[in-house]
Every structure is written in C-alpha cells, then in structure tokens.
Length: 288
Image (tube, helix red, strand yellow):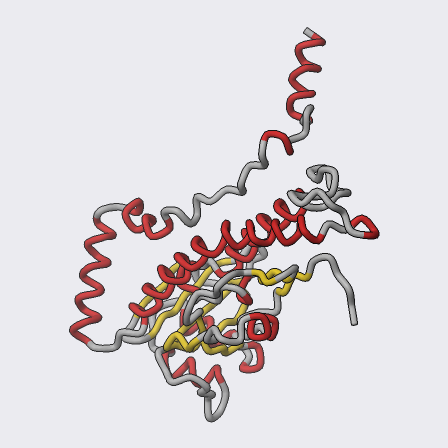
C-alpha cells in the first residue's frame, strides 16, 4: 500500500486507472482506421512535406531536424488486423504506386521498424478528470484521433494546468499559502488534502470541456479520411481545392481556439511580488 497526497494517472489510451475510477463510462472506441509509423533517413531526391489523402488512405511525410524523415500512413480497415507477411509488404500493396517520395521511403525502411496501431478515441466524456486525489492526464482522460496533431499537445496542457493548480494547494510551494489551499488546514506532515481536492476540481473544470471539443473536432477530420467512395472522394477533393485557393489562413481555421492556447495566469495574489523582469527594469533605471 502506498500513501500519496496526489496520484497522477498518465497510463495511456487503455488506462486501467480510468476504468477503475469510472467503470460506468464506456472506454475508447475504434475510430475506423489503423495507422503505421516509421522513421528513415531522408531520400536523396528533395520533396515537400505533405499529407496526401486517397480513398480511405492517408500518407504523410515530415522532415525531422536531424535529417531523418517521419512517416505516417492510415487506412480504413477493420480493427485488429495484421499483415499476413509483414507491415512493409502491406504498405507496399497500399501505397507502393503513390507519388515521390513514398516508394523511396518504403524501400528504405525495414519491416521490423514499422509500428502499426489501431486508432481509438473517446466514446463519451468522463464525468470528471479526477476522483478524490487522483487526476487523469492525456490519453487516459481524453483519447483522440491524431488528425489535428493534438494528442501529445493536450497532455502537455493538462500537465501545465495541473502543475499550476496543485502548486497553489501545496503549503511548501511559492504559490501556496497557510494550510496550502482553500480549506486552510494542513494534515500531518504538511500535506493539504482539502486543498488538493479543490485543485483537482478546478483542473477538471479547466480541462474537460476544452479537451472534449478537440476530441470532437479531430474525430470529424478522421472520419473524412475513411471515405472510400469515388464520387464522395472527388467531392472532398474539390472542396479542399477550393479552400486552398482561398489561402492558407482559411485552412488554418481548423486550429482556431486550439493552437492559440496559453497557460492560465495565476491570481494577482499568487504572483511574485518582484519578478525578475521587473527587477531588471529597476536595475536599468537605477543605473541611468
């Protein structure tokens, strides 16, 4: 048995902590597509970073800072599938005839270096992202499809908000006050259980609605990638072409309210009385 003032459960999309804390809430459901990922050296012939959509298929190629290339691909297939031979052969069957640099990248990867994972997303919002003094973070709280690139980003946001709120509830932290939190009563050993519980309730309030909106928006884009009907895909292409002609700003609107997030500012009373930036300005003034 371990005793803790705070437990942070970041145990992933199939979180055991989530199912233990909220057994009545359905777990993540299959999003309708599987994903392959691998990293290889950059091919000799130059290429533009891209994401290409086909009929129920997606291929993405992203250069990395170290000269390698990150590759991802998806296909609308039943859950639980695996290639009869190996996943490189499966990718060759599906994407081998696609544009440059797809064939070169597939030629460069070893079958054992390819990851394949079915994609799951939250079937329903949890009642909260905490229970008692246990907090859920990242995919354990809000699993989502990767179509907005927000899975890891939202986990980082969770961590930032959780750190800020729990710091205010901890007596030993710079932001903490006597008793560590709203309850004002410290437990033996300096802990402040009431303050932690209040902080986790604030964490749920700050994160649940925002993250579930990202889950929904990402899921809508994910469903577009699973379309396989030729007429429907032609209509989708025409729509994307029209949006592209209107400029990149129109396309980037899918990230409005997501990519422009910033951490919450602490209350005025919790801010340092003489932050370094202010001291610096005073020093300059004094020297003048």
